[in-house]
Length: 136
Image 1 (cartoon, rainbow, N blue to C red):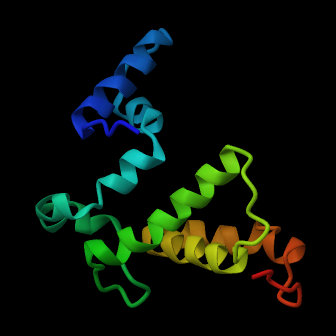
Image 2: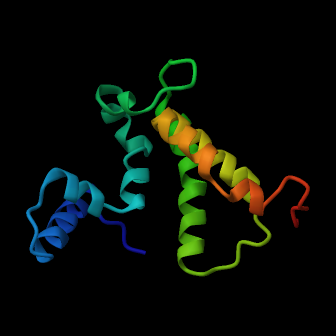
Image 3: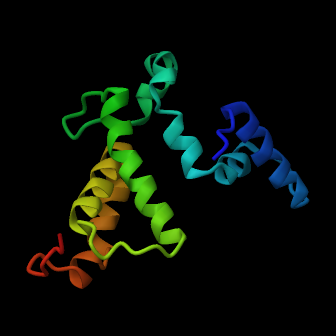
């Protein structure tokens, strides 16, 4: 798999938006960027960027800031799960309750309101109740 630099990914997203005959507004470009782009922005190569700016995007429940690593660590398994599902690969043996909890935690750090909405409307607890055995 070829790794594409962050600026190249932004350029591609911009081109994708304009190829769709739309203005490349910041919102459209952000929406066109991949999940992989966002998770890679939390890699250790971007520690300086995290310290200068990105640290403002997430807070713990107690209002204190997160370390870059605190946010990047749970995002990689979320990205992997998302990719497996998108490619119709089997996930039946995965601990989906753990992944769901991970997703809720990250959502809580990024947007407590979005996490509250997810807790209220998510059907995951109903379709994957705690008493359902986890395979391997």
